[in-house]
Image (tube, rainbow, N blue to C red; front, side):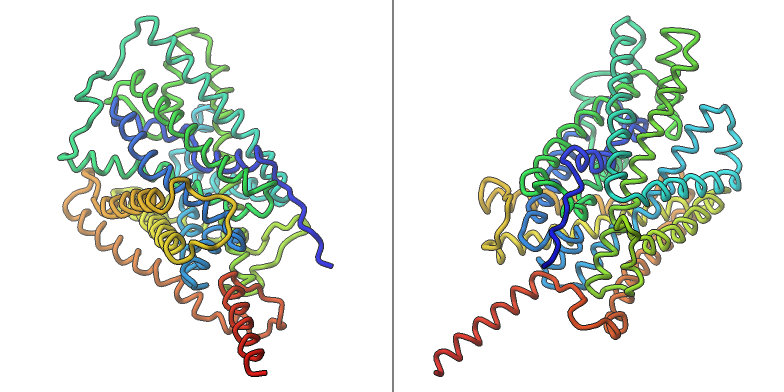
Length: 501
């Protein structure tokens, strides 16, 4: 008799893992560049992209037989194609291999400020090694399994995101209430930006992408207690909390730090210093403590991203989409071989972004923009799969369904896919900081690299027969849509046999 799977994740543990993927204080300085319009952008991106993505993820994850593998199961089953499902999963995984480096950069930058050791962040070789050591340590912490990842995520969320945000907001409110100068102007004109300005359109795309990742924890849904209730409830709470924290966080930074002095890399440390030193000239220790808590929050985010998509990749290998050695796990069910592959890709990106991003080289910008593009393709595939689900697979059993019927579901999906396509197009807009020759290089490299990135999962999945050639019959998992098709064929065959007799 098959042993019943033990549920390892409480709702709060799952919430913490998911929240740590989409909430981070290091985004506040970028948001602050839009000044009072940060509230408009956060609400617009939250309502027209973040909320639809969360709702659709919740419904697709709750469909019977679709929960395993996250977007791999959702897209593959809805579009009746293992390979298309693998492409969506690959894009989700590939983009975070770059994101892990940029998140590590933030941690290293904060540590450099705390230790007053700027060489850690300024010397390329030292920064490269520091990111490498940090990533190794975080990987080792994940080897204890999802249970321990959830514990790290829980404390990272409580201390590194929630507590630090509350401290940050209280200090900013008191600072402004005392009559200190407000660095931005409040008014209807400032709240509604001019979309005739291409720069504002690019900023909107940035806000949309700041919410990306809410679906990435879907690969852990089988480990979640009462997923039919807890998964959609988690999504709703995260949507509300993320919109509130991002709006107030960006606004707080914009109010305290003048735009011309704002640093996108160390804006949080910069704002904390202004606020804390205003209240006490001896606040260095307090600033360092809060900064370390913020670092803890980002470490929790990195840890959640390390095990999320990689677990989905391991699941795809169990369906024959990758070599079978990818499926190897340790005693805690952690996909160690997949983590090693991910580690090698991380080293590659760490080297490219650290050593190739200096001296006017556009490699850094190309790499980060590339991840945006391929992640948006993943989302578009998910939305297309959802359209098929609501129009041709409406009778499939599910524990959660977006309320309002087919009309509301269609509107929700249209909002999500339109904003995704918009953000995709705007991602090709080069930065105004680039020269004309660099702009041409940027566009050419971006298009070529994007085409290569799209081809990679197609090539990998093309060798499916080789991966499964020596796998004993019955060991490979079969996607739910195939099982349904087989059951229908068997039922039809039995009916035909009865009629003949």
